Length: 208
Ligand SMILES: NC(=O)c1ccc[n+]([C@@H]2O[C@H](COP(=O)([O-])OP(=O)(O)OC[C@H]3O[C@@H](n4cnc5c(N)ncnc54)[C@H](OP(=O)(O)O)[C@@H]3O)[C@@H](O)[C@H]2O)c1
Image 1 (cartoon, rainbow, N blue to C red):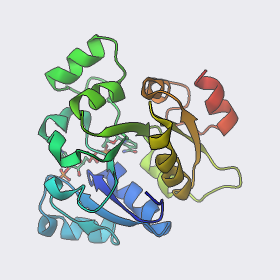
Image 2: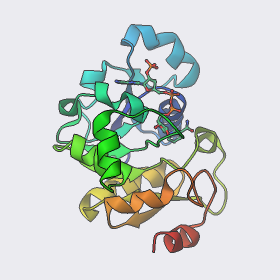
Image 3: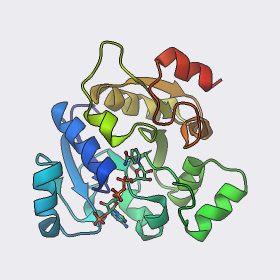
Image 4: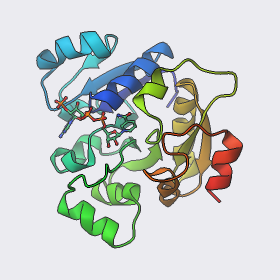
């Protein structure tokens, strides 16, 4: 995938629309979906992501290689794995405090997996990469500074990490590739650089 093509974003709330605005600034076409129909999303998108094109959730992966997942973890029961099959899925989700999770999610975490590993099990025909979860929607809209803020790209397969790293860079961040999906746990809520800016060197050290 070229980072300047088109992406899908599943979830059109604070995170999803912030990703869409950042992508639009980078010249990337965005199709976006939520639980609502495209016509129900019209006014919302006019306000928050005017350049994004609304599609039905089940069509989010049509014509794109990569879908950003920005749906609360508690709602992932309603995301059908086949919608995202054979695509790179960028898991930008986090668990918020006592957010209730689907049983499969609770069981996966209890078995010792990171949240992205649980998501990868749930979406077995997708290539899951953890990225963008530790950057708040406010920071997405912040002006790019001289030293770009570091952002994790955690994947088991480096060939899948690379296009995601290119996307992260287009959005204005310095990608730091972690060579396992499990390493994404270093940027989950409660970790030092969750919602806290880091340089690439600081974040790389945290991943060791
Ligand atoms: N907020 C941030 O700064 C931020 C930054 C990075 C990562 N994240 C993570 O991103 C995730 C979303 O956070 P948020 O703050 O954007 O939440 P939010 O503002 O509540 O938005 C959630 C979005 O997900 C959609 N959604 C829910 N169930 C869905 C389904 N089955 N199919 C398609 N869309 C569905 C909702 O649809 P409707 O609009 O139709 O209700 C809504 O657009 C969380 O895991 C969060 O930790 C958030």
